[in-house]
Length: 415
Image (cartoon, rainbow, N blue to C red; front, side, top):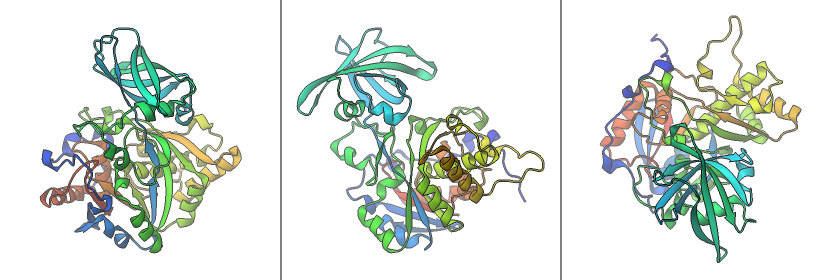
C-alpha cells in the first residue's frame, strides 16, 4: 500500500494541466440544463447532458445544495476629479461582522474591500450616484486604512440613510464575475450567475455547480425519489486566490462562513449510511466541515459558539495515543446536542478546511462540479476525491471539447 501523502508538502505545480483559452466559457448557455455532463463512475467515463443527471445518480442519494445568493459586491465610484475607483466588498467590519446584520445596516457601515485603480485616491471620499425606486441616491466611500494583501477598510455612508446596505448594493452595485471573464456584467448575468434556488445573500462568487439546475431537473430528481437538502456557505473572493507558495504548507486557506440548520443535520443523520452527493465544492467543504465541528464538540461539548471553526490543517492532525476516531454519526449527534443545549436552530461557524490528497472523506460519497483552474485548491479537492484519476477526467474533458470554469460544463464524480 502506498503511503498517504502529507498535504502540507504537496507542490501545487504537480496539479496542473494545459487549459486552452478558448475552453474557458465566457457566457452561459441559453439553456442551463443543456450543458454537458461528464460522468466518472469508479474510473469509467461517459458523456451525457445535464438533463441526464437524475438517471445517473445512485437511487438512494441525498443531494446537498448550497443556497447562498451572490450580492452585487462591485461598486464603481468616482474621485472628485472624475477618475474611476472600483470597490469590491469582501466582508463587513463594523458595526456588525455578521453578514446578515451587516446587510441590513442603515446609514453607514465599514467593510473590508479590494480597491481597484486606487493609487490616485489619496484622501477624501469617492462617490457613486444611483437611483432607488426612481429617486436619486448617493453613496460615499472613504478609505480608513490599507491592510496587508492590498485590502482596505472602507467607511460607507449613503442617502437616503434609511436604506439597508443590501438595497444599496442591489441598486448601485455590479455582479462580481470571476476575474477570467473579461467583460462587464450584463442583465443576463443577473439571472444566470445565480442558482434557481439561491436564498440567502452573502456570496461574492456563485456556487457554480448549481448553475446547471432548472426547476424541471429538480422536479425530475424528486420524481425519482432523490432527496435534497440545503446548506449555506457564503463564497468569498478567496475562492479565486491563486496558490503562490511552493508547497501547500505556506498557502493560507481563506475562511468562509457556514450556516446549517438543525433540520439538515437530522436529515443527514437519518440518511446514514446511504450516499450523500455534494452539489459543488462549497457544499462538499461545508459537509466535511460539519464532521470536524461535530468531532470537536463530541470531545469538548462546552465549546463557546464563538469558537466554532475548522482550521486549515485540522483533519490531518494525528489523534492522541489511544483515542478512537469520532464516527460521522457521533459527530452529527454532537452538533444536534449542542444546538439543543444552546437553544439555537442552526450551526453558525467558519471553515478554512483545505481538502487535498491525503484527506479521507467522512460524509460525502460523490460530487457534482464544474471543471476548475489549474493549480487551484479546487483542483486539489477533486484530486483528493478521485486520486490520480483526476488527470484522466480532465484529459478526457479537454479532448472532447468540454467548456471550463464558472459558465462551463459539469461533471458527476463517483469514486
